[in-house]
Length: 367
Image 1 (cartoon, rainbow, N blue to C red):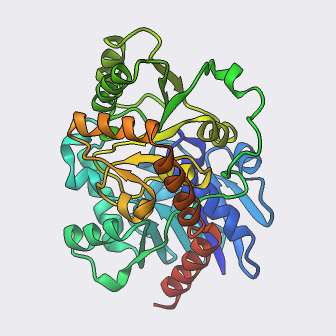
Image 2 (cartoon, helix red, strand yellow):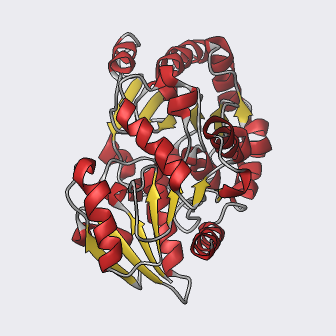
């Protein structure tokens, strides 16, 4: 097969869908027998970032979807003699080749209050149409699969789960303290870590208030470090941080992929009390590093964390504060979470994700 992958998200902001693309394409490139054509806005940059063999890189244009999706993408698929085209969220309205589309979640449909101002009516309509028109719809959790089937009334056999995973060569326990990371990011002393875009779903105002409450009861000496790109409706998060004791909250902004394992390894714990998740890659990355995790049992997160996470109710600030105190003060709990997290993370493998994705391509072509 000649497999085309619309990878323009690789040139975008750090987020789960970008990580998915990078790791999936790398894993697919390790499988023999098929040709991979990768489409992106900046092929030279994409080639360097992927650093994977056996890929043909093509330029995708323009960046505006209004012309790209209905005209350019179908023409490129025809020109490049593709057997199947794989897109994320939005596929072309028509195509000369079978379409596979990955829809990580539809939280913008089921939790619209968390996405106000982030998704236009047009983009939501495009996602719905893509789901209905695609030969196969891939998603990353059973939680998201159920939502897609129920909300979009898709045939169950059409929606296939291919789990997100973690690169365990990069995300693993450090033998010694990483060199230069504390100096680069100004990380003096112990800290709790939060990873993800700064937007309403991540529940950061409540986390900040709960952290300050726990910090006060523990006598200070620890900071909350937030790594992630500023996104929509982020102003409330920064305002809440400004109300807390000076220096107790630190924002790192977007962090390069290469630095994330070190940040997890240096952290006392990952705090992830999200209000809704289609998967939750940071939870998996932290567990793979042996970092204890505090998270909320919302959306797909229980599928990821299982019994390897300290679960807290995300809308109860006192529950979050108590969880923070426990995870910092109880060494036995920390040891159990560390061991369970490492064991659980070992079950998520990008090579298996790639094999499942390849099978979905073959199903799409054989319809």
